[in-house]
Length: 294
Image (cartoon, rainbow, N blue to C red):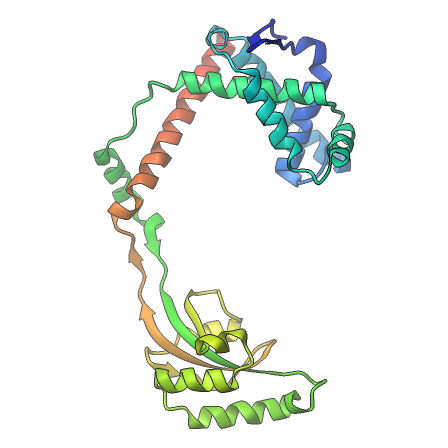
């Protein structure tokens, strides 16, 4: 239980509405873990969510009982915007109200729960306001120690020609489709300009408009046989006739882009952001643990 706190011009107490606030924690935990309402979960899943919600509410109450919380103030406008942000996710006001009821909430409880969340976020933000941002040297050391995270996989620039198989169409029954693509394959010389032209004329894939271009693809992007074949091909070579669930294909491997490590300069800010977030999270956790034992 926490005491009164003035947030803007309002008074928000958790003790008077503890069941409602807990329902909001149940709703959030259920959506996060299972993407459905708490009452739609199995008994076993509900037990898991209840423990998650109890822990979240305990942490929230601990934070809001701290001395730091009393120096943090939120405007009613901020809370209004948070409520409106939730309301905007629904197609109508009726859908919004019905979902609140289904989750054991009403507008007043939702407002209270959101206010408490915002208050906690503001307090935790205050706790880490003096946490130093990692310097470039720290970021570079982390980059050097985690090179595997910045390895770009090998990709292959590929074009294809597709003749579909459709037993309902006389010209696309399997036998005729096979003969059609084999005739195309016999005429190809492996040059990109010719392949583009043939793709525009004969391919039954939307990529025909772009000369059959599929772009640069990593492993695991295409149908299994096409994928396996493409990554065995040399640059500038044609495949034989390949069959997939869609029909028959011919591949042209235009270029091979070998795997390489992303330069530090391209990921520097991402690393700094990652290290900053980790540092702040650690500081917040340590601060909360200190409150719990004090």
